[in-house]
Image 1 (cartoon, helix red, strand yellow):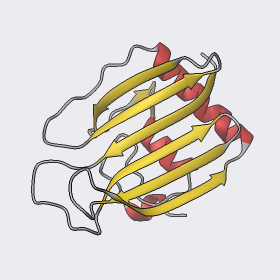
Image 2: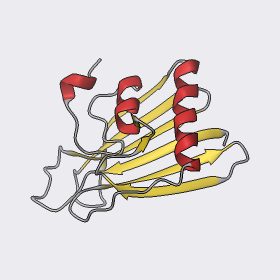
Image 3: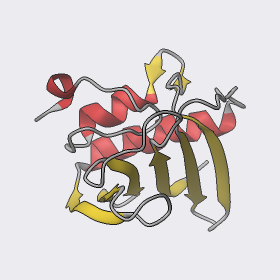
Image 4: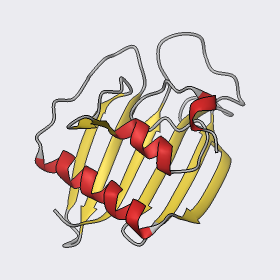
Length: 148
């Protein structure tokens, strides 16, 4: 599959204490085939469903990195992956748009374990997209490991 764009919305709201107004609870990450990346992190602020933008970032990544990311996600789409579903963690939704403008939707819980072969897609994205504390497909992260 030839991918034009990947958009991942990760929401880290789960059972437990209510987040504070400054807690980042949702992230939107878009990667285009041109290497353009858009990121928006939303804080809990006004409560559930009333999030406010806490941070935004737009930048370009190298063409070779973009091609590798799109290739991995293409393999993911074609692989018929099993997804992790849990009710006590946040969730993610991914929309992949191919070059024919057809949209492919995938959903799961922020359990991690979204992989192609031996490549964990969350770890891969965190390694090559220079944004601290990315949720991607897992709400767990080790800040020091991914900071650039």
